[in-house]
Image (cartoon, rainbow over all chains, first blue to last red; front, side, top):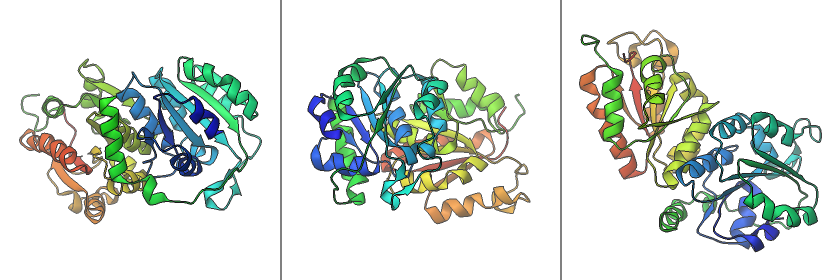
Length: 182
Length: 169
């Protein structure tokens, strides 16, 4: 799923949390990768700050379902600000993959897309498989935001965990400098 | 308001002096009536309202990464509620999150640690153990600290807490 996105990536800022962040730093190192989340659930809110601060840049956040459950109010906050450059992709694997793959509450019974729609996101996608993701990606990246995308995902390849790298201040400063120039 | 010891205007002027445009906020009973409403109505500021305080820590961090200064206004109860985000994002992640924290219920001119209100009494010791610089604002004469606190936070890429000890009017 991330590999398909990376093949189409242009100059978007990509915010990724937990497993998506570990994978992103391995398969597609890029100075505009933002992994400096610091606390579970906070990815969507970091991304909102970036989106408000740089309305000229597209922000794509790869969030987790367990993470979003910790910060559901952020859906309302984001919809209230209505950043046109905000794409919120929810990697829905039904569990806390980093924390022992324990299932999330109400696994399989929550329509996250409905929550986002009710909160006020402008465009909603529910993606069931890789083919649909690849077909819809150009539209997802072109649509006026905030856009919400649920991605049904399964565990793929595993990558070594490196949390110090994800939260590294030197990488963060490199991100700031690169963004300031772009 | 000439005789009132702390004015919303003097706090707002310090925000302006420090180059603040973005104010992230969740209404705090100490500051909402005069200061926050004034900021919402002032076109020089962009107020971003949040549903929960930990969002604010991260929004300010994203704004910083995008090249902007911001402040984050909340009640002390929200500070207590968002301790883990402050710990992980602002302290360990070295993000300059400038928190403006209303000490609801603090008695006028009584040191926060001497307050009869338990929640107020524990704020400064918690900030100290987290290594977060703090500044107590009770009078207009104190407000010069606000600009310098913001400047220092952004210079050192570290969080700070500006404690509002009475309602600014």
